[in-house]
Image 1 (cartoon, helix red, strand yellow):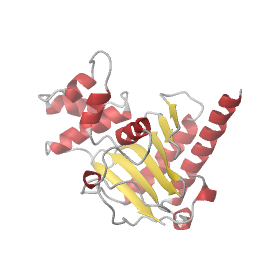
Image 2 (spheres, helix red, strand yellow):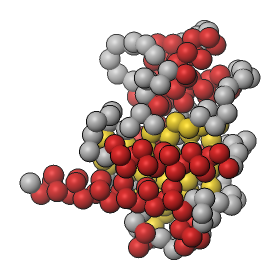
Image 3 (cartoon, helix red, strand yellow):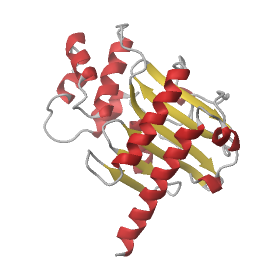
Image 4 (cartoon, helix red, strand yellow):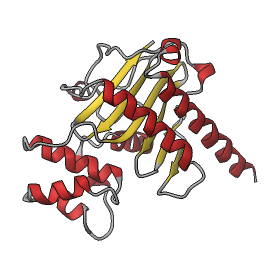
Length: 233
């Protein structure tokens, strides 16, 4: 996902198969990587139920309950102390019920680039957590706040908010992973999934999307450098 690997991207949507029309397992050969990849988007509650282990505590108890009240879901969605993905799930359930939700509240950013070798995916959430899936299927997780990537993650979210403020939500099924040579920027937002995709040098020159991609690149470089350094110790 580094700049030297990229060649062209823009904000125009591209035609591609939706998730409902593709292999629901995901774009990776490793089933574990596919599971993590699908969970990033917070649009399939059943996956979270299947993945859940341990005692069923809040807010999961409410999120998994078929009879959960909309008021309880709204409290979860608005609670900035909770995990971003929990809030995204709550917003998604409210939207399915036709309930009014605030517009433009960003919860996470997912950048996918399809290299010749395969798909690289970087996800950054407003709660400070970061997930990176390399095209080989190897993964790096960073959780919570106070970690050494916090400033870079915050920069990605702030730059993403600028993009979200300028575009609107996607009103169809989530697309399959981008085709080779493309990058997609997906934004988990209170009122739905926002995204932009296209071909790579264009995005770096674009005043709107360029800063977000560059911030993601800085975060990824630091993430890779520190991960490699820990393995070599």
